[in-house]
Image (cartoon, rainbow, N blue to C red):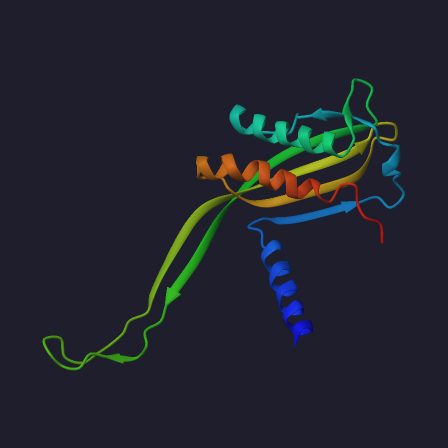
Length: 175
């Protein structure tokens, strides 16, 4: 019995900790030697964000890179290219009636009606490219999407969270 309770608790814990509002993906070059990378320089040519969001992205990215043992430098091993984009999302929802309703009274018998409505919002994504400075080849890429672009309070909280989740996958765990 204790074994089953332990399995149940472990499953519940795993399920709760793996829930994230973001979609995170990463890929890497199998030939890259990630242990040899010690320094980086961030390039923001393609980072088309307002200054507030740009600071959030760059501060958290720098914090994450330094926690991985990398240091900023002028002659770097890695060039970090950060990009941001967003797309308009349209959700279509509908409700279906439960059939006949009412028992007489002032409204009599009736049939429910379907109701359909749409919700439009913008969803943002961050892309982090790590480029080997010597070969100028992409060696790692992390992508995170699901940022609520339309809500300043949500962005304030979500940008550091999504950057931390993206960078969890660096350095990659080889299989």
